[in-house]
Each structure stands twice: as structure tokens, then as C-alpha cells.
Image (tube, rainbow, N blue to C red; front, top):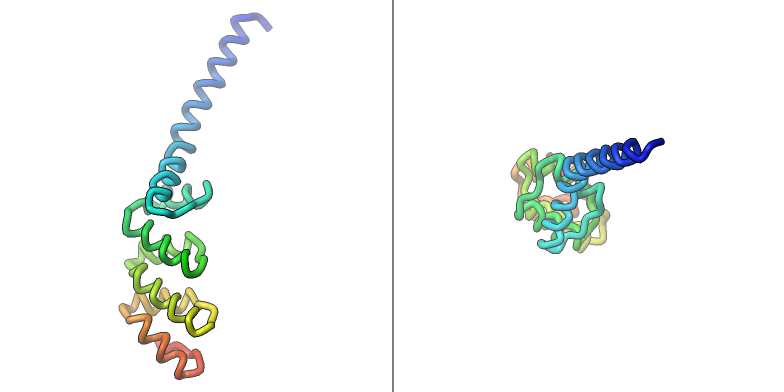
Length: 136
């Protein structure tokens, strides 16, 4: 290999790295920094999910942080719920109510009730009276 071929190879690798980094890595790093600003610590995969689903708004990040302080829920479920028009604050109330009653939160049921515009505090109270049977 000649010196010119080595220089050309190094140059091409540098260009590829720059393109790959700016398209793939930088948006996720930006998402990690933005979420950290709101007190939410994400791993790289979670940050990539937020970038892919365009969920970097302050209200979403704050809602996720508040829910995660109570109970860990997969980021994908929260993203889907948010895009469906769900209220993360109401979801947080429902999760909190179930934990206060020493029950494992049924995230699927809580998100369904939330999307039906139900007050989750009242719904959890009803479910407790009905032997933890939720009414849709």
C-alpha cells in the first residue's frame, strides 16, 4: 500500500464516521442531554426511541420522570400512550394510587382507562372495592 492509498483510506473512514455520527449518534446524544436537563436519566437506547418517536417535549419528559420516580414503566409504553393522547399526569396518579394500596400497577388497564378520559384515582378506588376488577 502506498502512502497516498493510506491517506485516502483514512480520509474515507473519517468522512464515513462523521456522516454516521451526525445522522445516528448526535440526535440521541441531544435527546440524552435534553432529558437530563429535566432530571430524566436515559440510556442510549431509550434516547434513540424518543428521537425516533419525536418525544422530546418538556411535558413528556417531565411526565416520564415523575412516573419513573414511582414505578419503572417501559419507555415504549409511555411513548405510545402519549401519542395516543394519554395524560401522563393522570397515569402517574393511577400508578401512585395502586402502589399506595400495595398492588402491582396494571399499566395496560390504567392506560386504557386514561385514554377513555377516566379519573384514575376514582377508578383505582372502585377497583379496590370490586376485588381489583376494573370496569371499562
